[in-house]
Length: 235
Image (cartoon, rainbow, N blue to C red; front, side, top):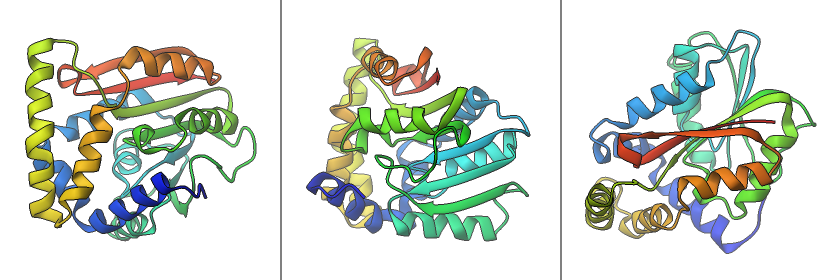
């Protein structure tokens, strides 16, 4: 595991909010995040032959969306916060995997414990901005992919239209810590999440980082006016 103060802080925050994380996502986005997950699944377009690694998989939203919309052969659902994965296991027990073989494992995205070329697809939602070393995590994703394998990333982004960007910035600054504090009792944790979104690079910068990390055919599609973006890249 990456042993640094940033990683320790991120793990502490998500440990504290794990049980209410899904509710927070639903309320803070007014339910719109479900459409972002659907777009991620459409971008992934898994086939029954795909072996998927879900990095920073949290409580399983992406994994279970794939299982519902385009079931692959298997999904390795990983995260480095045990409390988040415990929620994912409960969801699997309740049937969320829909018969897909979903394994759950505590994993550090900077040091993936898999051999080269182990997967045909890697997915990552809301993980890049929380990694201590984003480029290293991207290179690890490329390493474990087969040649021609795809990397599909959902992440918060920078709205290109200035008025919408300003309104979104106000919402981030005032409402995210408020909602998070009320739901989870951890306002400071959600202030960190707010700041991590504010400080995340624009879409074209992330595309350049993906290219430098060993990917080609890099593209993205904005969601909800650029509040979030779905990136796709090929090893």
